[in-house]
Length: 130
Image (cartoon, rainbow, N blue to C red; front, side, top):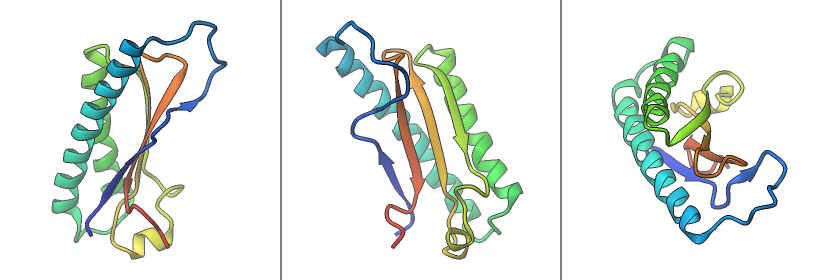
């Protein structure tokens, strides 16, 4: 298998819970934005993987992945769908074992504007490292 994309079913709480209960409409909108975001990131990852699967997993290759994911997230920020994000693709998540498997592991952390107190976590790479 080439790659899998994991989307955390429930967003991870990173700030104190607000006193206001989110409405069902906000939850639907949040899920829609997250789904569109994951689709775009997955398409970019798979396209990059197709061209870089024979490349060495080094800082230069990981920089290409970081820049591609960052540009997509900047588009979402410009459309006010995301207000903060972080792309991790370095030695911390690309261990020698992952590098030997011939893949590039990318972790994306983003805060959607519809749920300011929560973070959506997207992990791209192998689904399970056994």
